[in-house]
Length: 179
Image 1 (cartoon, rainbow, N blue to C red):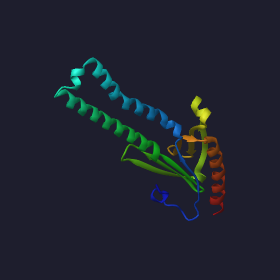
Image 2: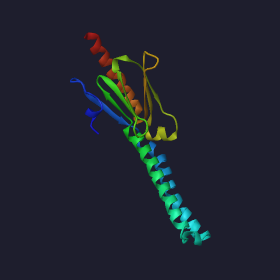
Image 3: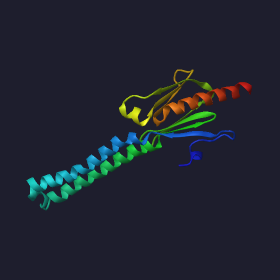
């Protein structure tokens, strides 16, 4: 995916960070996917041992294959939707602004921008064993207005990004006060 398709980059603008969620946050969804994919296999062996005539019936076998196919397609669609939501949520930090791109389902996306010189508060939230061990967490960026907040969810190294945002904000504030 090219950034030019998502944002119109200004001539003086330089991309500092291109952030996505930490890959470890997708592991539970992948584990659920694997477990759901094994359910029909386990049911096949269970039915084969308990009711072998059910798998050889003229009508029952095609019905079971149809149900298994519908189940597999549903699981694939669920997994694909979760992957799209995970992969297409991204945050772009430039030397002038923050661009928050959030995917909501397969066909819905919201893009919001926040000028760096408007930043009032940057807070990091790291809670839990895995968050601490693998150094990922949430970063909350607030402005003076009540409704303007960007949340970077489950990003790697949030403390590093927080410090960089504070420095970029100060630089941008100086730039806007001199012009």
